[in-house]
Amino acid sequence: MTHELIEKSKKYLWLPFTQMKDYDENPLIIESGNGIKVKDINGKEYYDGFSALWLNVHGHRKKELDEAIKKQLDLIAHSTLLGMTNVPATELAEKLIELSPEKLSRVFYSDSGAEAMEIALKMAFQYWKNIDKPEKQKFIAMQNGYHGDTIGAVSVGSIDLYHQVYGPLMFEGFKVPIPDVYHSNSGDPVQCRDECLHILEQLLMEHHHQIAALTIESMIQGAGGMIVMPEGFLSGVRALCTKYDVLMIVDEVATGFGRTGKMFACEHEDVQPDLMAVGKGITGGYLPIAATLTTEAIYTAFYDDYQKRKTLFHGHSYTGNQLGCAVALENLRLFEAENIVEEVAKKSEYLQLLLGELQSLPAVGDIRQIGFMCGVELVSSKETKEPYPAEKRIGYHVTLKMRDLGMLTRPLGDVIVFMPPHASTMEELYAMVAIMKEAIIEVTSGVTNVRA
Ligand SMILES: *Cc1c(COP(=O)(O)O)cnc(C)c1O
Image 1 (cartoon, protein in one colour):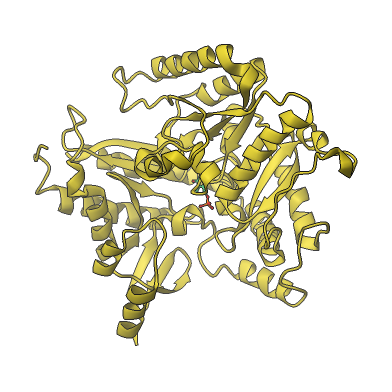
Image 2 (cartoon, rainbow, N blue to C red):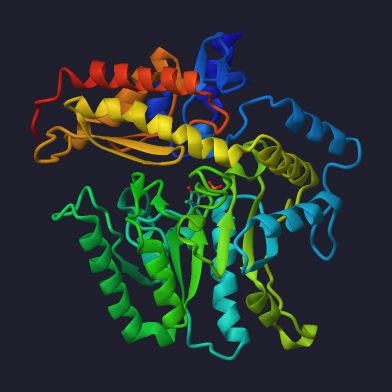
């Protein structure tokens, strides 16, 4: 039975973001989950060290979330949001507006983070058209940024490994550097920040009349390698966008819903986005709901008689799905009932101590963390920060070893991602970091001094 399933998986599937040759060598089929662990078809258990790809909040099979879906199922599974709404989508919109930064007052649903970003781009583009400034058409994106895998989101993305091949398909725009302290020459956060803000301001000074919006992840670049922005950068970008009349699109898909120890990461610097994309944790990791939140000013620019052609012609078949919205509502109720955000903030201090113990390992170059969003960068030389030769795939092999030892995650190059569910206890955090440590030691001890 299990053997057959594995053969079927190799024969019929094509998995996302996966070299299938790797999968064929190391297949894995998950059958069930409970708390922060999942179990494969052979009965082996794993800690969910990356929250099922950065989604899960309360663990798997959380009773209240399971119940919320069953209750909604007795009413209806799905209608549509085109020209009408439904009960949980309406109530969830109110809740999202209540929890999000003050300036945001409208919710536009979709099914994934990438779509939420596509919608933000279209809104920003059409906004300027609708208010008779059609020359503002271009976007500024951050180098090393990631906003999802659809073509619009890829166009404002900037990770060569994922994006370069699609170059000819992308729309053109401007790219500006992000302050990456560890990989910078100076290693000084203030200097890095000020240099990047200066470059951004030069660009805005010259081109703001043709720029619709700027896109940026919130406080930390996730897929780009867990690069935490120095204090004052995000708020500095906000100030420049305001000064040069450019909309600010903040991507909170990974960071939203408590992940960084605030409900939304932009709260760390009191930043008010003009558009904000959310997804991932919104349903506690249960169902595909995402949303683009925006201001009354932008909403109003689309509101007119139909003949004025100001409508936002965008939508998806499953937008506003009732089962998803019902579980999202219950998820957000649990956030309050169980003080999830405060708990993450508190437990992340303990996590910082745990991760600090990895610092002494010869292969650990840098440890970056904001809340429960962490990356451990492995390097061939601590002194020179020289990376391992890419073909050694050290990060990949460390995560395979972690899988052996009973924990799942995915690396970003040689950065080991640690993003446990918000509900993880201190004991569970300890056990997971211990597995990471053991895997790093086992895999790197033989190759630490190898040079390219
Ligand atoms: C995951 C992610 C996305 C894309 O979300 P999907 O639901 O996978 O489409 C966008 N932005 C950021 C910052 C992400 O981490």
